[in-house]
Image 1: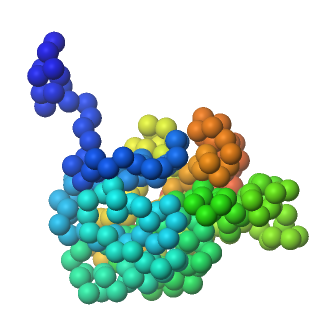
Image 2 (image 1 turned 30 degrees about the vertical axis):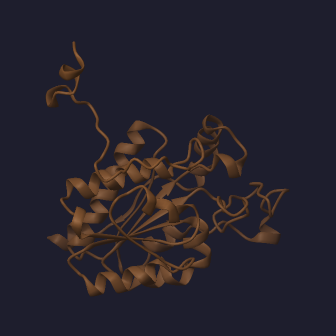
Length: 259
């Protein structure tokens, strides 16, 4: 079989999304960001919304998404992405608008913006990358850091008497009247990636149809911040993150609304 035979459409198994450009990704080995970028690029292309998508990324590792996915991006101050997305969607209601945020940004610095935007039923999607740590700025404890989990600012492990409990922002979002679709996924296996893609597609579709606000959490690893190899980080995530941040849909009222 020649190279020309391999690249024929009927033999094509996978190809890189056109919206995912050729810039070398700077993310650490094993980071989930690159996988989620690929899913976003695929979905936007498949929905035919290349020229009608506006994404908002704030400070943190998430900010670099604009460098890899060729759609319109707006940078926001730390934690303020939902506020900026609110303005964008209200100004251009025919656009697909979504935010791309980490857990320190979304669940700590931007807690107010996150909760109120979701509760207002703003018609955009929040993509929430949760690796339970501040990955870019030094590996500090985040609101999502698990009890007993060590970080640069709690080197002996998170202590409930000193630091309080981990904040489960997605559970909170599911109880807000303004949310239509709230789900928690991961991208550590092929099956998980496929489920995450379906979840993101559903959230984007609900956003475009004006069916409430949507939150898609991606439970992720941070090999550098956790000081683990990518393989060890995935295993640790499965053993420690998943029992607390359980995967699956927490709320889906979109079908009922459509009927």
